[in-house]
Image 1 (cartoon, rainbow, N blue to C red):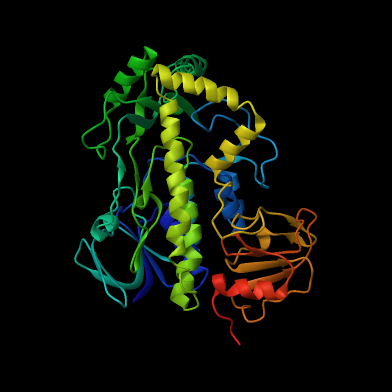
Image 2: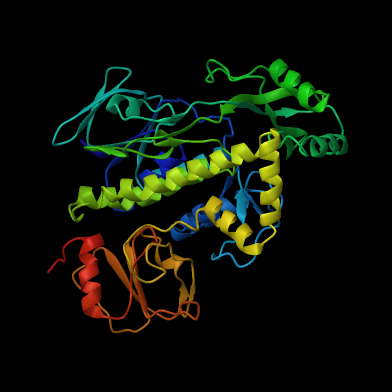
Length: 475
């Protein structure tokens, strides 16, 4: 019997598997595809996801495979320079293909002892008070204490649970693929720049060796979006918008995506939970999808591990739903807004021009970037210090960096007073007595996901908060 079965071996499922293994949880990842996909759905990690990788000691694996960007235009393609003074030690976006992200996360999960089985499709499940039974397409039945569906927007797990997925169907569709072109790079760049003055959902990004990532609006929404477009369909739409198909040929892969926007009614049903696209889908504007899923896993992993290991306080696992669903709802709203701003309708163009003026104000620009990159997220932990509920940025300590102390996935008390104690919780919390010129509070208690659970210098006040997040003390 497994502790946790994760259905879906994309970035969300693989990140979750690694987080669970940090706490000794016996985890199995089931992925229906026999081989890793060649389709590059996402192209980068946003600031919060970069911080997540740094908190777990993974960032150095990613940096050599990516390119750091500090460019504007992340909100609806409205051009404005990258803002100054972002509250992070990683003020950039890391351009990296999802195929590489998937590979690096799979390597990490395997190193930590997670089992990944490819070519295994979940087709049925049932649960009782003791666990979950998962049925595979070949008739095999597997048993686990919990199961997490991270199996994408068409999630079989969500459908088997009967969880509602309300929202709006796709109204427009976009074609996407990697292919070679037969025109000089400067000619292609000139035409793309001209078309993008009015059509933001159009582009051709060089990938090297004469290959480009081509994006172009589709003629209509396909009846079955699981069927990829043909090269001729891509050519036809290029001619519609650019007056030429650039001689595109030799596609590596072709795909399509729509602007459907949906949010699961609940993230937990008994012993089964949803994460990533299984819980929420939205247009890819702003590049938030992959990042949202990774951050779901980062929030859920330590909580589910605490439940499995028997020390979770009442309500901790349910806080995954209450914290992460509002974050997804906000992403759905901002992607809806961005899609409206990309419309060619006169009213939408007028609003876009107005917002372009507002973005020239630094505070507006920074606010939108913090929203897109998720460093503006604040969970509702009740009244208190402004840091409460926010993730703590990496800060330099007298003896190293804060994030370097968080690789093990445990809670952390950063104590600048040297007078506090977490005796009774030492098996779950690291007590770091150190000082930072960047931190103007006496002490902070961080959850394993880096969010601030307490601020202060009073031992009795601290003792009142520790059980809320870390369960009962061990004598």
